[in-house]
Image 1: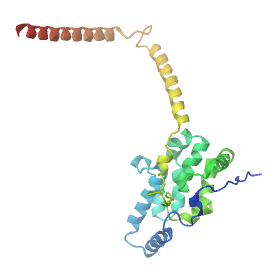
Image 2: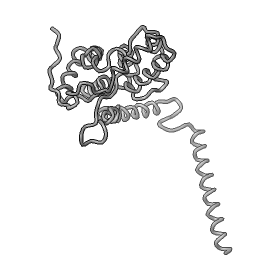
Image 3: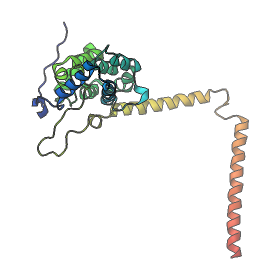
Image 4: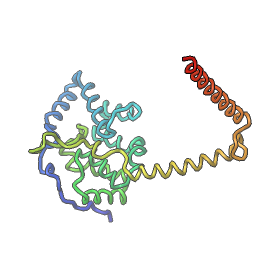
Length: 252
């Protein structure tokens, strides 16, 4: 029996606003009109939407993160923007750069912020989605978000997700950007890197001691002679400088 998504209360004031992302209908109509008419601005429009999707999912649009196959499929009309976003979330780049270095709880905050354009509605929603990831996998979690009424109502098939928010009375600016609210790495991953760094350092020391170029933990004879020669040359140069300075003072 499949585990249903747990119910969670909506704690955000913005959840009661019908159209948080702005006038998305006019954007969608303009895009569909351009596509239907085969206009010359279609390529520029689709390029802008692709860039927006990259920045929303990866928070940047670096060349190394681009998926040319997905872009080609989107430009040719074989997939929708929603399929393009799904491909980015399930790509190796996102898996290695985000999913594999985050806990399920942190992944919920990251993906909900990217896909739905809003923070989670408290710990209840975080727990509900983390159960989905743990029981059904990350792919099902992504598909459920993209198939949700909230996503389809805000962005549909043709628009990339974007942060949704509004200027609340008493606040001169909107919500903090998602990438600032949820940094890429958490403290648990930082601590894991520290532990791995110590382990890796120990492994390197073991490798160094067992290296054929080192004997009993000592460098080769030629390297030791070179090192001693450099020390002697440095000491001679320092003495020469000190003698020159002292002679200058005596003359004056």
